[in-house]
Image (cartoon, rainbow, N blue to C red):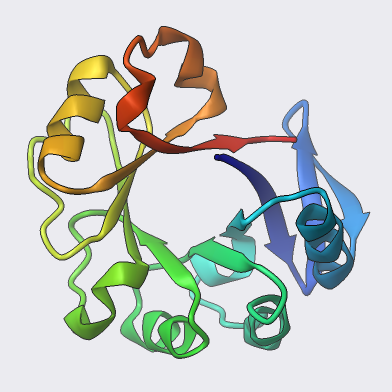
Length: 168
């Protein structure tokens, strides 16, 4: 499954091109276009929420009626709780102290290179630097594995991959 990524800041959607954020418009319009093209999930890097500011929660309330979203945010319980209430998948570091294990299916661990833990408490994992060994390890732990497009070519066994985050 292809998972397009988009940046969100001040209620606007952006794409990163050459290290620069370029405005692409309203997040709702972007989501509708992705849904029409067959997309089932959008990966959102929320620049405001990563800085601890929950400015875009009303945007997610509308987006989740159209399409599934996973949101990268700061590991702050208030933001996490509010995103989970809106049925957003929440992307966090595997070391995040999460009080709400009841919404485990919506929790996604962003696994850094060299992480040796098992991402307990998380349903899915995103591998920052995917290898065949890491895909196999997390698949055996019962996690759905998501990788980045940049790593897709180096993975031989595609069967353990749930989705690929793309920049387009």
